[in-house]
Length: 475
Ligand code: FCB
Image 1 (cartoon, helix red, strand yellow):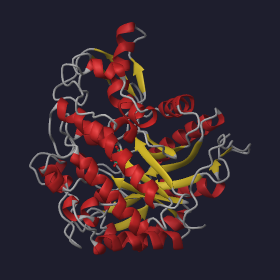
Image 2 (cartoon, rainbow, N blue to C red):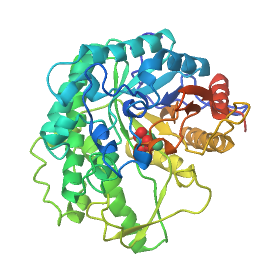
Image 3 (cartoon, helix red, strand yellow):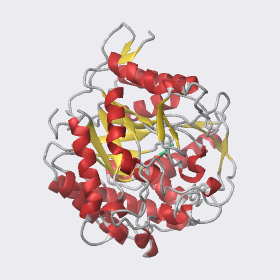
Image 4 (cartoon, rainbow, N blue to C red):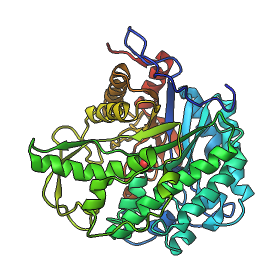
């Protein structure tokens, strides 16, 4: 594989090949995903300064059990072994995130070479292993200094992000082919500043809406910087956690509740990024919160800089009805109009329903709305209460069933014309699951956090066999 070879072709998407079993298109990207704060540890090494997650996790009552990412899966020190593990599984792509406070401490000024060196080594190790690096610039670890200066509700944070994007591109752009600006800006804006369950833990509808706009601006400004500094073959992307929404009842009131959440959770990103506009109904729904004067002339041209693919993260759908949501809420402007009902059926350890149809719905929606845009499923997976049995095995049949069902849905979406180029399991390793700390295990590889011992779960062996076969066994 050449170092920079991932720019997707813009022609109609590849088609799945025929039986036996469910075969994926040749060249389909089989990946695993992680994020810096969730696995790296080494929180005070190489001049790294605290991020909002260091601060938040040290704030009493914010993270289960008082867990922090100080050590996490100790990946910074065990990276070569973790890459070797991925090589052994046969993955073609690895989606990781770069820690902003590690490569640009405090979020301003020159790059920290020692911090960048870790990512240089990681990328070299991946390329040597034949694994394509997929780098995410922002997976929620804002330098605390930038939060102290106002954080995402302030416009300057978007400019700071674009500068940081340039530093990372200069250091790694010759060897990283795929770049993702942001991971799940919905969570960063609405969980971080709306209901406060994520860092920095603020609870303000206005702050959340301002943050969403400035994240869109950061994405567009960052994408423009990347485009200017990376080889023309580079793939520039964005990852959204689009919400798959169903009305509780087929009534006008419940359909309108779906419309409201679609506006404040999906179209608030899709419209500025792909159409250079704000959703008119969102502006109307949020009129009591803001007049959106923080969106300045020219901003929506910046946010809609062309990109090469869209990453979709999917875990579970939501059932929505007319009603009211508890306060504080992440649904700015919609909280007094919308209620959520737990879906029936099996659940994961997160209490999230298992329903692969939602992934098919999202991918076919994007096929219709953004027909020429290649798609990647950049996260999908499930937490279960895994443990090593006395013989050291970790059996996780529910995760295998979950992944199988969701890959089947991806295959069906491709057969239905969605241009899906790859799939990344969340996650390679058990890790720091944000406000749940280490209590939720999403890895296909088990981590004993006392010893840092890695043990492949049955799902890792299953995923390796899927990759080797290029698809699923069943018809
Ligand atoms: C996503 C995050 C990821 C992980 C999974 C379970 O929202 O991007 O870091 O926590 O959920």
